[in-house]
Image (cartoon, rainbow, N blue to C red; front, side, top):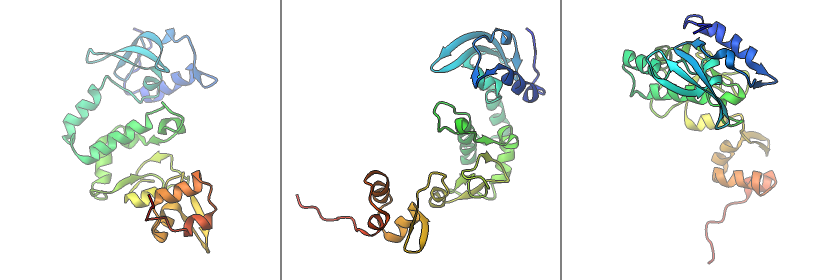
Length: 237
C-alpha cells in the first residue's frame, strides 16, 4: 500500500489528487497510480473502468467490506466509507428516524448526484463542511426553526439566485408555497401593473397553476389572455 492519506489529511490532499486526475474536465484513462491509495476509510485496490457512465473502482473499507464505487466520489470526499461511517454517526446521535435526519441525508444525496446535467452536484450546489460532516451541527441549527410541513430553502437568503450553498448563513425553513416562489426556474409575468411569479398569479386569478403553465409554455398564449380567460368548467359531450 502506498500514498496513504489519513482521515485528518484527506480533505486537503484528496482534492489535489482529483485536480491532477482531471484533463479537459474528464478523469484521465490511466489511474493505476491510485491503486493502493487510501482516502478516508477506503483503499482503492482495482480499476474497474467505466460502468453505467461512471469511472468505477473496487475499494476496501477499514471495516473489511469491499465496495464498487465511483472514483470521482472518493476523490471529492463525497464517499468516505462503505457506509459504516454514517452508520456509526447515526448510532452515536440516536436520531436515525427523526425527520431532520431524513432531510439532512436527502440534501447530502442531492448534492452528491452528478447523473444528470441539472442535478445539484452537476450545477455546483454543495453543503457546507459544518453540516456535511456532522448531522448534530445541522440538527442544533434546525431544531428551533423547523416544524412539520416546512421545507429547507437555500434560495431566499442567498444573493445568488438560485442559491448554491446549504449553510446556516443562507438557509431557512419556509412553506412549500413560498419555496415554489423562490425557485430559480420560476416564470415571472407582468400584467396590469403587477409583476409576480406564476404561482402568485394562480392565487390571484383563481386559475389552476398547471393551466396557467400550459397556456404560457406549451400553448403559446399571450400573457393577458392566459391570465384573464376563465377555464371551461362545463363540457358538451
